[in-house]
Amino acid sequence: MIDPNVKPATNSSGSLTIDAVSSFNFGSIKVGVTSKTAETTNNEKLGVQVRDVRGTGAGWALNVKIGTFTNTTDATKTLLASVSIPKGTVSNGVDSTQGVVAKAVVLNQYYANIMNAPKDTGLGSWLDAFESTSNKVTLQNIAQNAYAGSYTATMNWQLVDAPS
Image (cartoon, rainbow, N blue to C red; front, side, top):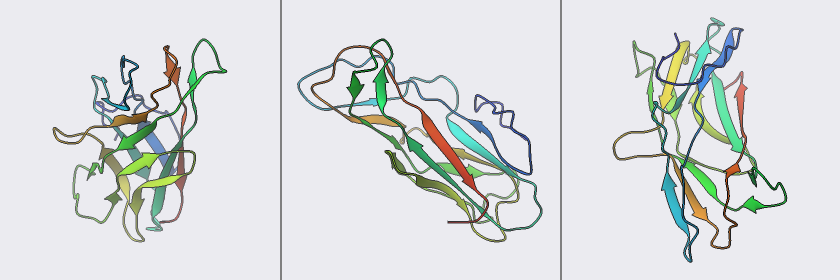
């Protein structure tokens, strides 16, 4: 079951899938003389949802990395920054103590494990809700010498059919 508050749905099919994953919007950030940090301005719940209906109990690992932030009007301009995702709250709507683990990650060009289901866990649908009142997804270490403009980066998600 996809949590209707985590958008957008991926419309994936299969027995091991990412059902929904959020995009992040950090709004406007003033370019200044010191490194900045910005929280997301999304209105919907931020997270990722994995579904495992293989029935094998093999476990799985969800990894993520981010590409370069590129100016939307001039691809020769890039933004040096990192995205930090806090350790999320994991639930399946039935038994959240089954062993699936969420991890805090700072995204860069290498895959980082953000959620893991050890052997004999992770069956069914699992939501990793990223934000709470005290933890937010942030854009951090924004370079001081950035050009003004809008920037975008692609997040690549990798669902591996074995635990990490």
